[in-house]
Amino acid sequence: MLFKLLVRKFVKNYQNIKNKEVRTSYQVLSGIVGILCNLMLFVLKLVFGLAVNSIAVISDAFNNLGDTGSSIVAIFGAKLSNTPPDKEHPYGHGRIEYVASLILSFIIFGVGIQLIKTSIEKIINPEPVEFKLVTFAVLAFSILIKLWMYSYNSYISNTIDAVISRAAAWDSMSDVLATLAVIAGGIIGGYVSLPVDGILGVVISIFIIYTGFRIAKDSVDLIIGSSPDPYIMGKINDFVLKGKNIVGVHDLVIHDYGPGRWVASVHAEVSDDTDLIEAHSEVDEIEQDIEKELGINIVIHIDPVNGKSLGNQDKQ
Image (cartoon, rainbow, N blue to C red; front, top):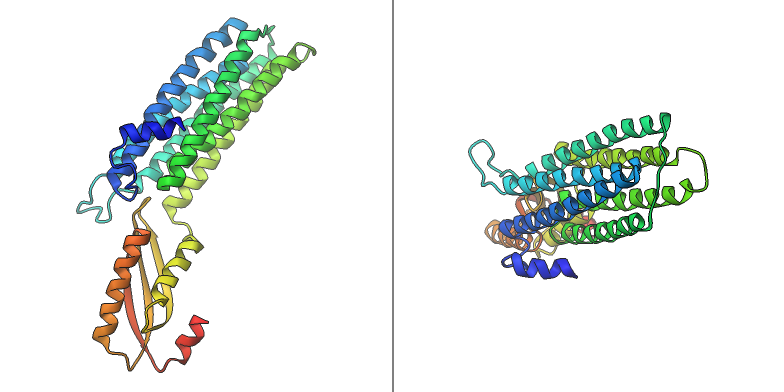
């Protein structure tokens, strides 16, 4: 994969994905590549859209220009989210990445609203559209580029759990669908008298607006605080219950302060006849293991219980 080669070349210590600087480098590289690709596609589509007088192609071009702005926001979001903790923000600034994703959704939404207005005007006052073979070639090339962008953004999202990369991946896939609609419109428009170009411009705009809405919803959920991932909760419980003196767990709480910045607490039940010094030593090791394996800063509280019967039930 080309992007993996770029990662190896430009991201220092790229395998250390738990390091905040490495995560930021991944996202900055993604943003720079996104800017270059989208600017190229914007210029190509705008030139050919104006040449054939197609609002659908021009709409698609400005969609790519909006994606350029999104990439810039992603870069600044990644940089700012890595700002060290301070007095006002003792847990760091990781949630800025979620805010950046929300801003990205507003940009996408605004582009969609503006283009839907232009497309409706095109339906009311249609103009002839002349699609040429070279235009189809440009659009097909655009689809290949966007599929590649979807692929590398998905790769980053899965590698470093970056919500803004996940949003960029979905945006790229919506661009693929939109461009396919433009190609279909160019073919159909040659056989019917309907203002297909304007109609497809509306369809593309709706795709863009929906993408913005979906990204905004996911971002707001993360900023407000959504339910913890059941898989992560299960992994924490498994780690704690491996302790030889621990007979049960309860009241697990996880706080998300940004990707890779989770803080948690849980109550571990031990028999009331357990040596407390030994139990404390054991939970200290468990805390270190959880932070090492899951990247979660966790505090484990010891709760003595009367006998082991209750704890044994929890383990079953």
